[in-house]
Length: 257
Image (cartoon, rainbow, N blue to C red; front, side, top):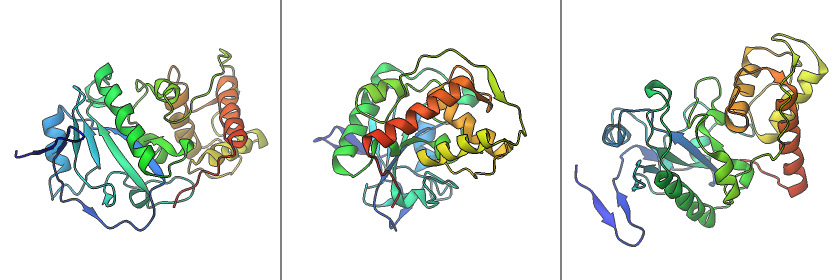
């Protein structure tokens, strides 16, 4: 596989043919895991014309960064997804694939050197684009019914500590369930409303149905990874309330497009 090296950034240029023109300005950063055996297999797929998938960047376990698609172009990484009501997330986002076997391969830990590279690249992207801290998302955030990446072992709190995204500070341990599956209650509607404020694609029905539980699982996977069950418990409510408060206090008007 031929590659040329960008000596200025030490990023290996490994072009993918899988891209087209953007229809929206960049306002979202999406983090994925590759979910494949190794970097070579993942890179081959991301560059395969028949696969019709790509990302702007891929970061290997040793911290090596590969650039596949120019940031000005629309890479094909988000798939069927939604954030702040926008469904063409490919047009509005930059995607980073992080080499990791994912859940199919036991969800191995992310090496420190790899996470350092993720943070360094993310910071440089944020310097170039107008991306609100509440619009730095997991693939599972924008496609909760079908995706789990980058997974519950990804260190979102560390990224937030380094100025990339947000993370709640509450340390409550109260996990008493407040609503059972299929409950119909205004409290459920309040949770759905709060998730929608953050950007999640969720209907405000007041019913704790399967679709709502998928979104809650995505929220828990990112902000409360110790227990991911899709139910509304005290701890989940407190974390959600804190994040909505953080967003309002910051004056964030995070939207897409």
